[in-house]
Length: 130
Image (cartoon, rainbow, N blue to C red):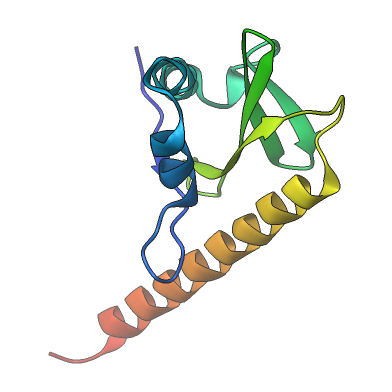
C-alpha cells in the first residue's frame, strides 16, 4: 500500500506545534490521535468522513472522539502532495472555532511561503557556476 508523506508544520524557531500538542496529551489519547494520523498517511487526501472532514478550501481536520472529548488536527496537502499537520486542539463547540481556523490558515500560508523561498533558493544555487 502506498504511503503518503506527512510532516509537522515547523515554526521559524524549529518548534513543531502539533508535536508539542501531541506530547501534552495523555498517553492513551496520544496513541489514538497518532493512529488517525497514520491512517491519513495510508490513505492520503482520499481519507474521508468520519476520519477527516473539510473545514474550508484545502484546510481539513483529522477527527477523533475519545469519551466525551473531541480531538482535532488541522492539516492540508501542499503542491508536492505532502500532508502538513498545522494545528492540534480539543474541540468544545459544534463547529471549529474561528481562532483555530485562523491558526490553520496562517500556518498554511507560512508553509507555502517557506516552500516558495526554498524553491527559489534551490533554483539560484543550480544556476551558479561551480
